[in-house]
Image (cartoon, rainbow, N blue to C red):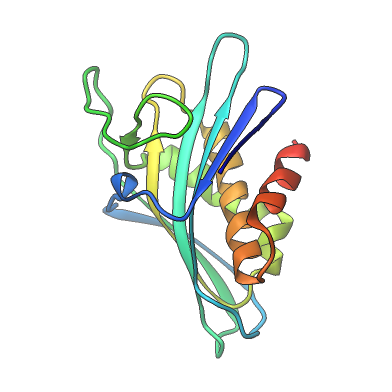
Length: 178
């Protein structure tokens, strides 16, 4: 599903296999989590921001696996995309524009981790593991800010899915809070 408002567009889907990547390094964070019954969830969120002739874009996806016996919610963002060069092949399917390059460099991974853990949705996740394993960047217009925003959106969507709520309403609420 795609929705747009005020120059911002968000696409949410269950998965995007062309965005799968493996990072050699891992950015991690943990917070206390409630050991409550919950379900497994997977989602991919894509963001496009129209800003003064630029169009920053980011795609981030992952899954949440509950740990009913656990006491922490772990957040993991693998990274390790080499430096991008002109002519890199963009094969990651996008619903909001041209194809993206699959993977995540360290600076965008750190920003995504901040987005995942900083919003109110991170506090509502039960104990378990939220692991990012899908990412797509635009070599020209992606930014740390865009990945921070899309990280917050992904966390809100996964939190809503885990709790049996509407992920689109959760994403709209986050977007309207910017």
